[in-house]
Image 1: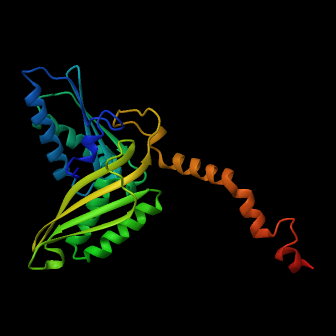
Image 2 (image 1 turned 180 degrees about the vertical axis):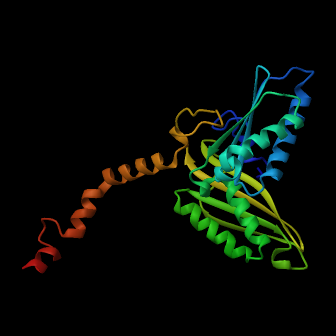
Image 3 (image 1 turned 180 degrees about the horizontal axis):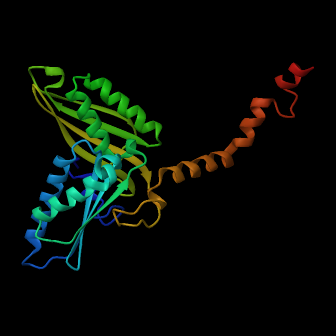
Length: 262
């Protein structure tokens, strides 16, 4: 079995939700789908330095709700909220819906989002930083934030070489065939003077054992990596934290600790 399926699409309806939430009839389904694609393309180009992770679009009762998940909400909001109002007016012209609402959700740990990690690597490569250094720094910061594993693949004229090639960097575990594993995936590119460099990022955030909220705007609960780390720490204490303390301090067994004090 090859690894040709998108890890996010592979988990839709299981532990991941859809980024477009609406119902369309046969007449307007195609138009809404094209409109969603145009909105995402426009916002990613309009706010190219806003640290956008994903854009969730909802349509209810003639209302268009666009939720932007970003690591830099200040850039999108602007001074006094003027930038958001400007973006809202531009989206009204782009779409057929006149009632547009924009919500902004801040991503508190951007190191655990594949889109932001890939975009960070791409910007560094565009600034002529060595691609190996940029990838290793991103991998280290992602693992430091509690991810179980990360895999990064770059393809193209790496380092300005004449012949294009691919290189892969991996740390930890990234089980793509296990559906209960929460794996984030992104595919971005860096536009360099010698051509495009393709960057693919897989981040394994851990195992989802219970029922999960499929709303893509849901924050907290099973999606919070800090809760998983706390459970792991508690489990480690139950397994033998007291025994480790006894070994370090010498305990009551009259070991080296007792001899040093006499």
